[in-house]
Length: 98
Image 1 (cartoon, rainbow, N blue to C red):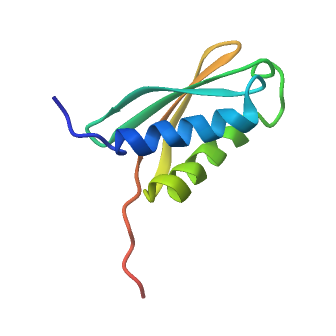
Image 2 (image 1 turned 120 degrees about the vertical axis):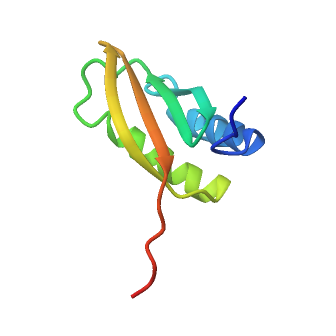
C-alpha cells in the first residue's frame, strides 16, 4: 500500500470545488493518489471540441496548490476517448533560492 500524494480529505475538497464551478463542461475524478503520483480523469460536455480544454488541467493544479498546499506539476496528458483525458501530476521539486 503506497503513501498518498495529496491528503485524501484535502483532495476531495479540491475535486469538489473544481467541479462546483466547471461541471458539466469539465468534471474531474481522482483515479490514483499514491506513490508520489496523482492521476485525474477529466471529462465533460465540451472535452471533445473545446480549443482550450487543457487549461482545466492547469487550473486543477492551482486548486491543489491553494487548497491542499501542495506544489504539483503536470507529468503527462493522455486523451483516452474523444471526451476524456487522463492527467498525471507529480509533486514539484523545490528549487533552492539563488
